[in-house]
Image 1 (cartoon, rainbow, N blue to C red):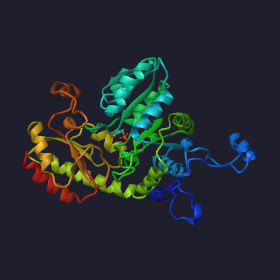
Image 2 (cartoon, rainbow, N blue to C red):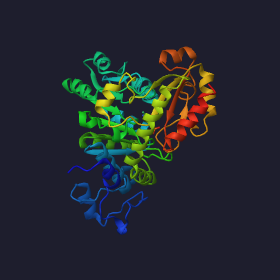
Image 3 (spheres, protein in one colour):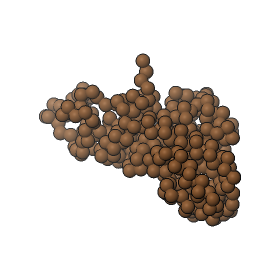
Image 4 (cartoon, rainbow, N blue to C red):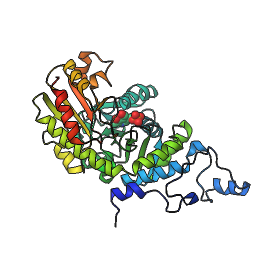
Length: 390
Ligand SMILES: Cc1ncc(COP(=O)(O)O)c(C=O)c1O
């Protein structure tokens, strides 16, 4: 019988018998792994010896366990752990592209991913088209040179969701690889690989680590694709430390339990905000009012802890509300126990002029909240008193 995500979160990837009879996966900090003799070394390089470790930049035993757990959670053959979500994206793209090839990327993908494609890859002759985040938008952007489609589901900050089954069908018919950044969904709420998507990426800094205290990234997919990316990681060296891998395994033990709480509180808070007289509009894929609600309801188990909304008023009105909050911290990031709140116009897009914000579709009065693990009633009471300051 297939095991539940709760059981996988606790046990997947971890051998029953661990070194020193330890109950938990040991943290192994070694940077090199000695060979018994030259014969063992010969057998290792010929692939005749079971050992996988050699030198720290090519991986370590704690990383391997974290990778096996993450692969199991996403239902993938293999996973590669990286130092950050961005290094997962950069290492994966550098392993997959070559000059002359064309990428389709959706316009509301994570800003730094877009910058990497637009400004860095372009310098090496990799072309791209940025398009509206829908299967129709992606289909219209495909050219005969397109070999890769990059998108997110849900996106940030408007939580748009893409129909992944349709997207995989479209891409496979034209032999194009698909890459989904599912950081906001997490493997608890969405399994892109089950719809035929080739690779799924997460910033493990967020819900997977889950405690606002580690940075990591992961890419999951078929063994051959992951191995090609791993070979590049061995060259670039953007690994998570063994300690980070250990912390990630520890954080993942409670992953499913945490996600259930994030989902429940996210939905309740989105519902509360939607009926609040000081709130103009709410974006949360679990609400019937969200344009992608039907897609989200079909392909997601829950809708996560990220809620975006505009307050009635201008940018300072939003700032007044945020400054009046007593529980959420004013900070970037998401996915941890502490609720975080911010105005994208004053965080990710601080460098943009009001005119540029309009072009980018970032409302000045937009607020993004990462609903944490506090009691939902406490958060609702806090948001209610803060909205009175708008
Ligand atoms: C959707 C998404 N992808 C990727 C990243 C980058 O992850 P990291 O900060 O771990 O490099 C982030 C970070 O905010 C994100 O929100």
